[in-house]
Length: 266
Image 1 (cartoon, rainbow, N blue to C red):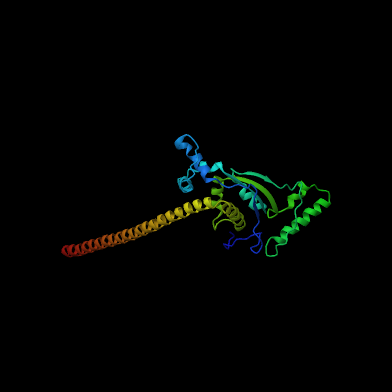
Image 2: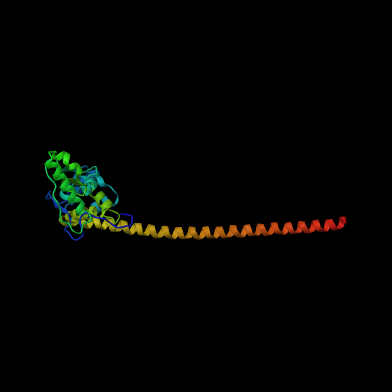
């Protein structure tokens, strides 16, 4: 977000979402994951074929944060995205990455008229081409390219890391281009795995309901504490006023006593 609380994006809203493709044609087998998890209980990874029972088991694992089981399933994506989005995703340590090389592949100009960065990006590409014409190598000329230049990466994440990415990047506080890419990753993964989607979203909704309850309780507690503080402040003020009144009365009595005594002396 910038200072005006607006998202500034390179990829315009009226263009297709950046290319996201699932390369690994896999289905997350919840029955098998449940069987792996049962090793902790039975010493074997026997698969129970009861889907409803397995879904509930996996759901409880996810709710209880027993996440190591989800490391046994992974997904590979091809992402055609801006470099600055790629750098945000490549910060996740549990991913495996390979990326297009600007030592070998020249950048292209883009026609995104609604993007505020289009002109600056294309000017940088012109400077890059000028350096090549002057004899500079690609790995030298690439130094003038901006991070809004497009790159292609192939990434592999296990489910545990994907859940972490979804939790962090599918929020209103995430840069909009990154959120759009991760949303597309989420949509493609869950479209292939409706059982996983149902389990994951049920846990997510239950967690939200729990947070809302805690938030409501916390607001009630804060309200009570605020009322208590106001009462204490009012009482302290009244006590101070009573003390001051008592002091004033004693001063008055002392003054009157001095006057009387002075009269007796005379």
